[in-house]
Amino acid sequence: MPTYVAFLRAINLGPNRKFPKADIVTATEAAGATDVATYINTGNVLLTTPLRSRARVEAALEEAYLAQTGFAVPTIVFKPADLAAVAADAQELTRPDLERHYLYLLKDEPDPERVEALLARDGAADQVVVRGRAAHILLGEGYQAGSVDPWGVEKALGVVATNRNLNVVRTLAQKWCS
Image 1 (cartoon, rainbow, N blue to C red):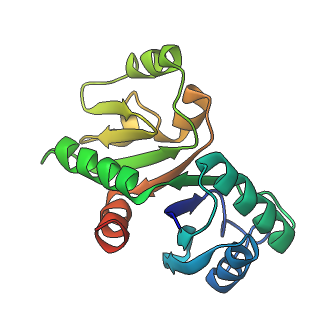
Image 2 (tube, rainbow, N blue to C red):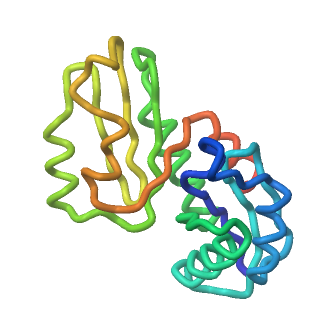
């Protein structure tokens, strides 16, 4: 059976979107998954499932999460090899002058025209690199005053996304994708 890594978007933010790790495991198993593991309380889930289509895995998990929580939980799924490639890209893009390196994991590949428009906003200290279903936000010194708004990436690309910091992605790639 295939293994996947799922990233849950917009959970444990404020009082109305609580989704504890134990409930995530229960709901993931209710979706037919086995060998479920979580990492920190931000919605990182390792699972094995008989489903072979990424879209079907996402749909099954989103349905189970809605049933468990009562609110929609957009879910972005990667095969372990694909997540390892994202982590390798992140390592390649890391430079000593960066203050922050965020990763937006995307549900779907963005439209090339939207990517081009976002890349046109790169500033002297800030840069966006989009590779497949990942957008790397590279923020240099003074990033808060930079031309790239890391919180506007999802809207700019027009796809559902979730943000993870570089250390989380590296850790998950080491733990779950080796």
